[in-house]
Length: 543
Image (cartoon, rainbow, N blue to C red; front, top):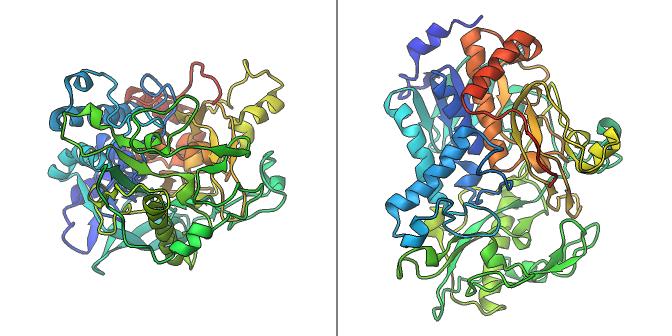
């Protein structure tokens, strides 16, 4: 049993030195990492939270991805804390922005009115809101946040991690000692350092029996990542950027996909994610709304609709560019060539912008690096869709959540079938199994899924006792990653990991033991429910 008093006594008072001691160390402050820290803090733990960039929030902030959510999120299908975060976003705009009276009075204000989400907004607003949610714990000495810091070494003995060494971009290293660690890094960086068994890419069908898995494992076949960026459109002005170094390559690039991509990547025709047939979209930054039956990509992820603000507040609408045209699949971030592929992905994004400004004639498109907080105008961090994933106590398969697979397993009709019920549920979520083109040359895999639960067993490595998965590195497959990777689900995964770690410290029992002991599991789930977790769906349809 852990002597919790030792860790609480030492707390995080050694933040200025080279050694930090706490109750729960959260490595990575993305969407799941922030939620994990908040859950542990809420339960009385002292926490050290590390972050690779200078913004907490991950895909919500440094990766610049507007929340992509299921249709019931305003009422159900997330944690109370996540809904508080969304409410704070709206309040931030009401408190600090010159909204029109009509927009100010809208209970469900969507600042950008983007069609992808009910709450498209500028990433620095999420940064401000998340910082505010963490602030009181920092002031009270309960939380230490280490920015611009990455894990570089783990001290693991047997089935426990004793300490993790992290390095600031200046080269200064600190050692974090804690009874429990949450890996919430964007790519599962703690797993190889600590010798925790993990998997990457596609699993073999013979191992998972998943209908959409390949015959043989493909560990290097990983979903595309994207370097996002924001632009506004100022009619009558010329904001053309310098011609990107690799523009000639990307202008002429034709994807070699299975099934085939319809023409050049830089174009307004692409593969339909579901049917894989050619699909045409339009791009018109001067338009206010989508025309009937058409998708205007500028509106799709629009994060500021100037009509929601008083005249003159915005020179033009602001849109976030995270489209098929800047998905990068010619290599992976994980591996020895990660830096090279990140550089090429940045060149792709800049080439897309230059192509729209020159070839397509939209010179008024202005790169908004001020909204990204960067000199090059691009997001601080690439949008990572797929991470290293733990080999978990329990792995969620397509047969557990996919609509067609569930119908085949259960023999039930579409109207009657539901996702697998997990007795160790620590949360819920809903999203299609949405896999973007991958580095192995596969086109989209996009199939309907059912509203699902998050099993506690998917957070627990098969062997390591005091490390939990806190984001998309949990026990899912390449296939089911496609529906567990988006904002509200990753938040719920992280919040659950932080709460489970706190329960382990409080009770002196490991997460594995808690999961396997009915009375302890029931007590945990009761505490989760009291803290605003939803553990089961009443009824919802497939997506």
